Image 1 (cartoon, rainbow, N blue to C red):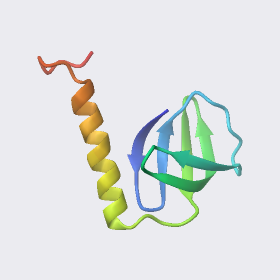
Image 2 (tube, helix red, strand yellow):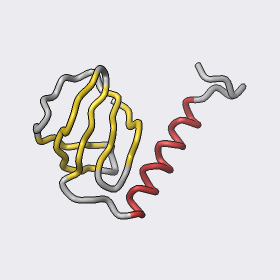
Image 3 (cartoon, rainbow, N blue to C red):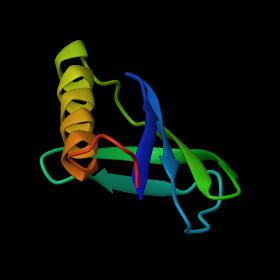
Length: 81
C-alpha cells in the first residue's frame, strides 16, 4: 500500500485489496494511525475519508515522511527504477 494523495480530510492509496465502500478501516503508517471510512474504490486505488480531520502539522509530517521515503528509494544516479 502506498499513499498517493493526502489532505486533511482523507487520502488516496495505491492498494491491491478489495474493500467495499462504507467499510471502516484503520490506516496504520507506523507513527501515524487514523480511523477512516472507504469512500470509493477503483482499479488498484482506494479513497479514504478520515474519521477526524488532520491538522496542518500532521499533513506536513506525513508529506515530509513520504518525500524522505521516495528519496531513499531513488537510486543515487537520480533515475527512477
